Image 1 (cartoon, rainbow, N blue to C red):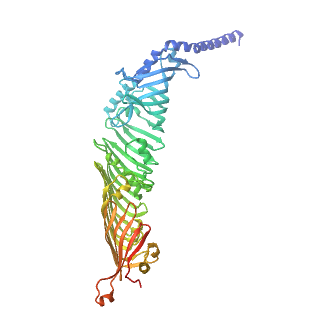
Image 2 (image 1 turned 90 degrees about the horizontal axis):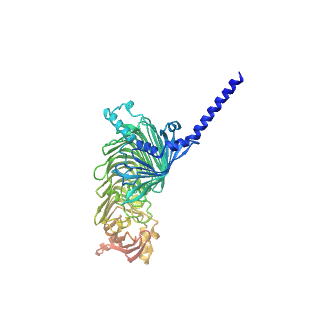
Image 3 (image 1 turned 180 degrees about the vertical axis):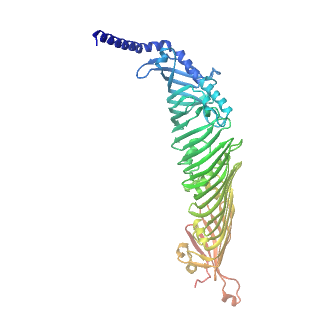
Length: 616
């Protein structure tokens, strides 16, 4: 190759390198003079539909990316110049197209908002959302898409959707605020994430993290047809929300029209429903007994109604299946449906839906009735097995109803203690205070097992019987319910026995005189033909109107009072045996040994009053 040709080639390459270097060196100068602040603000306004103002002068960087760094950027409504900006950002970093810049145009695909403040407003459905723009390319694209959707709602022509490019918006260390009584109140802090939407007719994703009410939250959303969704059409949508108190996800079809529509699979889980209620600030006072809850269901929602089908529900690890219906009217929302459980902890269930205190029984607790003022509830329940504390039940059929300040839980049928149980728990919130009514009917039950479950192991007939309990009274706390209740207790038992009662030893002690504990004569069993108890409850104190047990030779009776609050006893009693010899000699009346019972329910003691019955 001739040397002159080589020299010309080298000069050509060198010239090209010099030109490129000059262009790169001149690019910041060109950008700073031609891509001026107003040009960038105009382009951002054209896209967003808000009035964009940039107080600081743009700084142009070429390496490692060609970008403009803007400071003190605000986005405001065009229609209300006195309103505070919708978005304020200390800095905005915009990735620019170098070729467009050389031609005097602005083209950017990514914008990073550093320490932005986003002002939101509370909507009618309780969500906090920013003000929607009244114009701009995004708004016009949505209007165009709305026309496409309205032309064929069932199957809109996606080829007619706008294809304008959008790009990616990132936000770092931001926050959301809302105006409350004229002051900005922070709703969300430490906001980080990005929204990616390459073109208006393409898919879009949103990923964000932040701190809401002291808890870190993560939100992810995605749709292959976001423009159809924003235009009021139906499009696929996935949404997930994750935080320590609760997680939520939705995967299905959705519509954001005036009559919103959702059809898909929903999952919700919370390790503590109490914590969720406190965190969400619903205004419902949570009970300490409320534990974990999880729901997985096929959901269909439209026009103020949500249907949950094939619902898998777990309360405190008690799994159940069924269907639920939620109606959102002008008054309180209404929840109705049917749930079937294999096993169910009734205390956990009651804590979630009625104003029950701590299931652990550790100390008094206010009986919360606020749930009855927030929602109407009508549930039908069944359980193959259920527990109520230490009580085991089977084949349970029950209902839970909440309406207009009234909470009612009824067990219409259940098997327990070898017999049948029916029970009702009713809370009626009235201006003068909450009134509580408790009813229990135990039919054909084993008296010994029933007494043990009720905490009464002394002189309880072991045999088949029927027990009825009715209590009514004011209920500020659980202890006050029983301390102030009025009502009645009745029980009848057939042939059986009085366990832990040695009658000959008892009679011997009464003959000898002096105090003795009932434990001293608990090493025996007394067969009986039957027993009957009738008691009247007044302000938490039981007055025995009749308490008798009859055996072949003896009749044992008690009367007096037993206090719930102090567990104290003040009873008189007697053991009667007809004296056949006395009757033959013309003497009248039975032979009786009388005594006094004091102490407490757990440690009663006996004080003889008179002697006259031989235990031999």
